[in-house]
Image (cartoon, rainbow, N blue to C red; front, side, top):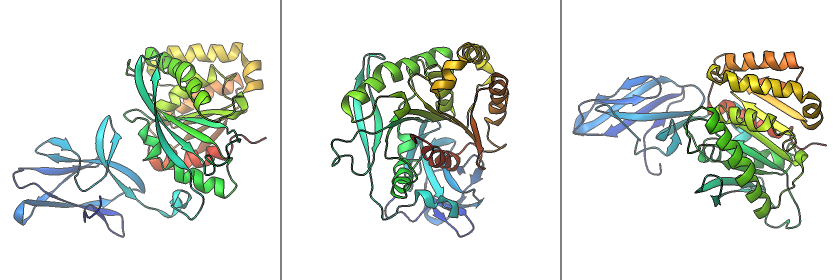
Length: 342
C-alpha cells in the first residue's frame, strides 16, 4: 500500500516481510509454506522468504496462530476470505502491462435477481469508445471466477482490463464487453443444486439484465462463456447444455471432479444424443490447463478422453504454472483472441 516499505521483493524474487506486533509471541508468514518471523528491537518482526514463483500469490500473517491480512499490503478476496497479495513480476507478463493505449473501464453494477431473491452485483469491462460509439453493439463474454473468490477476482487479480486494452489496441481481439459475475450461490458448495442455481441465475437474471441495460449483440455467435476452476465447471454445465445460447466456451484449469461423476455422465449422454446440434452451434470449445502441476490436470484428462470418444471437437492448450493467476491471465489473453471472428 502507499507509503509502506514492506513487503519488498529482491532481484532474485525473495520477499522481505516486516510487521510491528510488540505483544505477539509468535508471528509467521503463510505463503502456502509457513515462514517464521524473527523478533527485532521495538516489537518488529521480520523474515525473508525463498525465491517465489512468478505471478500473484495470496498470503496471510499468522499472529499467535490467527490468520490476518498484512496492513502493508493490498487485500484481495481469495481462499474464501480477505487475504493479502504479492505480485512477482516476470518478462512474460508484458501483455497485461500498463501501456499508452486507449483504455476501457471496469464498472460495478448492482441488480436485483428475481431468481435468487437477492441484490447481487457484477463487474463489467467496457472497451475504449463504448461511451462515444453510442450506436455500436458489442459481443459479450461472461467470465467466471474460481472457488473461494468472487466477482472481484477477474477485475483485480485477473488484470482483465489491461489484457483487453492491449489486445484490442494491437488488433488481436475484437472490442467486447466482459461480464464478471458472482458464481457463489446461496446453496454454496460443489453440488448439483449449486450448479442448477448458477445456471438459473445466469440464464434468467444476468443475461436478460445485461441485454436490457447494455449495448450488446444478442445472437449466440456474439456470446461467450468461460471460467476458471469452479467457474470452469459452471461453464461446462451451463455452456454445453446451452450451445444454442453460447457459441464460444472456455474452460480454464477445470474438468469434472470425481464426486460430479453422475452429473458428468448425464452430460456425456446429452452430448451423445444431441451431437449434431452441438456440432452445428458450438464454434469454439477451448480447454486450457496449467500443465501437469495443475491440481485439476487429471480430472481434465479424464474428461477429454470422454470428449474424444464422443468426437466432440475442442482445442486444448497448456501454459505452465499450475493452478494460479498467471496461468488464468494467459488463458484469457489467448482465448479472447479466438472470439467473435468471422
